Image (cartoon, rainbow, N blue to C red; front, top):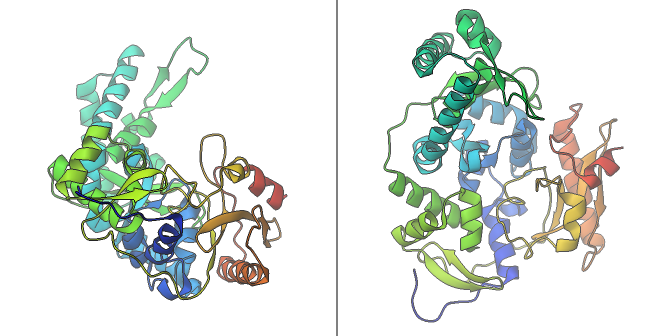
Length: 395
């Protein structure tokens, strides 16, 4: 993982890499959602609006955002919305399905199924054999339908409506439906994925669909491939960044770094890593750039150590209590503020860090706000995870 003197990559060069590789500088914008997802490896998909907003911020022709993203996700199947790292929902290029499942999904899936069976047994619900029978029946129904909501699946397989008590006697006790828990487990296991939403592209209600067929890969090889792709777009990154983003144990991170012969470099935070041959200088974008990125955008959430692009004093206004980032305003690779949409549709923004920000920056940010408003149109966007600044601006 690199011997001898290590090249130092400072914060400015890291921002230059980010501008180009994350397709944020105007000259590096993408032609399709597939290019965006391929460049970023994964788009956060917990909030469905984030996917479209993240794509729109990076398309050369933002007017194509909704139509092209829906085509890629639901018509062509070039992108897939599924569970991935840290048991979180992402959108990946479909070609990465096998890599994601083998590298991050299997261990989580085993724990999720065991937890479901334990909860059902504690509640006196039917056993594992019964659950397997219901699961096979539900998957057959889904294959026949193509896409279906949980309610539609339960009409064809009524046992999905079975309910059982959860955490009886505790403050968070409740009643779970088999369909809710089972479909989540099947998602983590890579058997089903999230399909077309009910309603517009901002809707959090969705249909389930069979997962794309994929080979079963060796977990170690899959981890090496996922890390290689991520470092190619987000490197340099520290070991802590890698452990946080993947959700792996530190031993798995180190094994994957060794497998791809990652090259060690010096960062302001300590030792970082890039893919082999990527430690050399990188020319930055030719022109200054601004961007309005959505809540949970993969650039804002890409690293655990964020001081090189986000001043610590800005975090209380831009993050919720669980660590989810809200909508952010960027100037030349730094987060300098946030934005929101008001009830009348107006896109508004505020600078929190105006150091070195002049009239050119404000003009560029205003242009990006107009660009965003032009394709969002009459759609109203409320992030799933609200942050203090977004709430204040949208009021």
